[in-house]
Image (cartoon, rainbow, N blue to C red; front, side, top):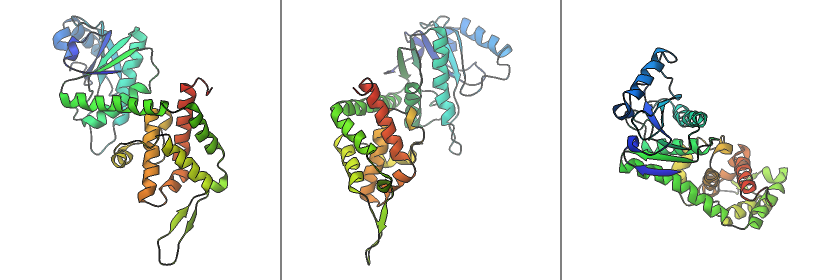
Length: 301
């Protein structure tokens, strides 16, 4: 997975992705790839997509005069402050890769879809794009995000390298340390999950966790699962927080970030860990880390 700044239409790749609107007649590739690209788009509008290409969908045409063999057109949604359209934006990347697989493309170059005329905030668009690509099963060997501005390149680079650096940090620990964590998790009893609250006279209530549960928390911290990042902003904005829904398909770095949100959160708000036990987020974290460990170590050997 690469990030570059420049002109997408001059990129050497098997396929480049054209961020268009439902008309299929928008986007920079038409100026460089016509007349063949434009002619195929008009043919698609006259036949398969008479009502326009739906948002989040993708379709391929020839590359025409471009350096790429194919152009994959996808209709990027317009950002809305009042409606969550992130699933449509993620679908643009998934559907484009699905089309690329059907074509036999080994390399695909994407723009920062919907961040231009679509008005999508760069940081959010980068997170959605990178994680959608990483979560998609594909035969494409190389994906490059080709951005138009330095700001966009920085946003995409931060997500790409941030996830990779966290994963590398997790992988640097010996396998035995991870097995120790998972054994401690497996050793938790129903009593360890039933947190007791105490209210000393004249004080606010606070939770009492068992020693077995605190051991799990300490092991998390020692394994650098508690990672340095703006956990407050991330936990507020992330769809994974607070319950960990969707974590199974997210990068392992998100399991580390969500663990951080709970472990550090306990320092500032009594009962944060209890909420993670109650809403299933901690179990989702452990499950994602265990699956990552199994993949890293070939079945945990």
